Length: 340
Image (cartoon, rainbow, N blue to C red; front, side, top):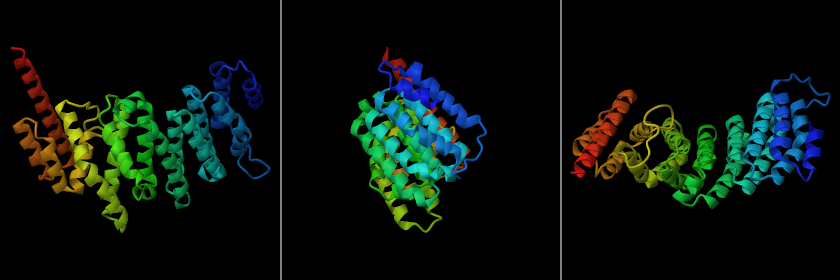
């Protein structure tokens, strides 16, 4: 496979779809499904295969930087290689892989490299020995992302990048939170997320909400840990951006912004509201008062009363859906009579 890849990459008429992608699929299948005997050198044979293929993968990525399908195949190969041999055996390749992912993302702005970075965070994030390396990777990728995601129009043009960027950062919060929470990057991510919440794209919207809910969940967990500096840093960001987040959530429920995920799974409108309320009830009540200024009076009163009631999550979800239904009915009623 390696010889064929080298030959085809050396051909001036190389076509990625016909020449490169099938070979990457074959190599991935080898790594996933074949039982490979242990190498005499003591290193894992899959690591040796990746090392011998490294320059070819890099050459393919350099030659066709804008080919999204190629980027997906390369990142899929790395994912299965890492998982097939395990984090411990793959550890010598982690630093080269992270460097390659950053370089490839800088060149291409392709979302698969963000996804591959999130696999690295999942596999190594809970080991403190790798926390600084992982943070350096996600910080570099965020810097690249912010260079071309400057406003809502930019985010709308790159929904796949928005989705994978915030899933990556959400995994960092889950697996390796402290370097991110203690960094100025966290505030920049929340500012970007506030814009991302307005996207009319289901997956990008959900990725954004997933990151916000993960961050609030971490804030709640800090109450049981002796990590005062982390708690203060996270709460400061939430205090600064909380009003904008709540405004967007209410606009979604009232029908002025997209509302894809109301209360299902992780990364939902109700989930964020419920956890924010657990984190700081008084502050959320203040934000909600502003955000609900244009909501129907009865629906507004009912939702505000729920904040102080301490309802279980399922009952809170029902209250949020009831508010949403009341707002939609009022909107339909207003539009109907506006035609007369």
